[in-house]
Amino acid sequence: MRVIDFLKEDAIIADLQATTKAGALAELADRMARLEPNVDGEQLRRVLEERELLASTAIGDGIAIPHGKLDSIGQLAGALARSVPGIEFESIDGKPTHLIFMLVAPVSSTGVHLKALARLSRLFRDADFRRRLLAAPSREDMYQVISDEDAKY
Image 1 (cartoon, rainbow, N blue to C red):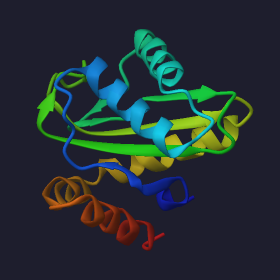
Image 2 (cartoon, rainbow, N blue to C red; image 1 turned 30 degrees about the horizontal axis):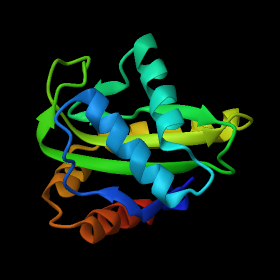
Image 3 (tube, one colour; image 1 turned 60 degrees about the vertical axis):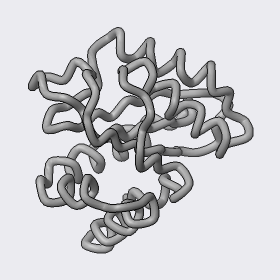
Image 4 (tube, rainbow, N blue to C red; image 1 turned 90 degrees about the vertical axis):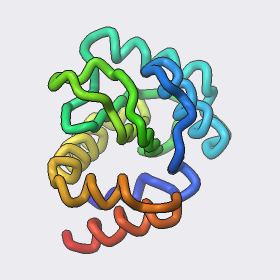
């Protein structure tokens, strides 16, 4: 599974404006709603926040992978946001979160959803990959970093 199969370049926010976890989820949900006509941004935000109540999706090393399912989305979709200063996301290592990859799947897509989460977890474990994403000067450059990494598999 390749990340660029479910991440559009326009779904990348190179300079996240939010300074809180709730704000970041809202900003990502809004971006997804603008790109996916059947997605209601407010409904998606609520789904993501409800998932966060179970346990934080911040996996450490400056990474969070908030995720949820919606009836209204036809296929797996993602959005990526970068916060250079970092935000408090209740990470397991207690450090600020800089890269937030939101994943949204149709309710019926358990297998694809889990494969995507596993792929993202493996990808973000690579410190060099994280460094290149943080250093990329633009959305286009961030997308290229992901595309280049995907080409290795």
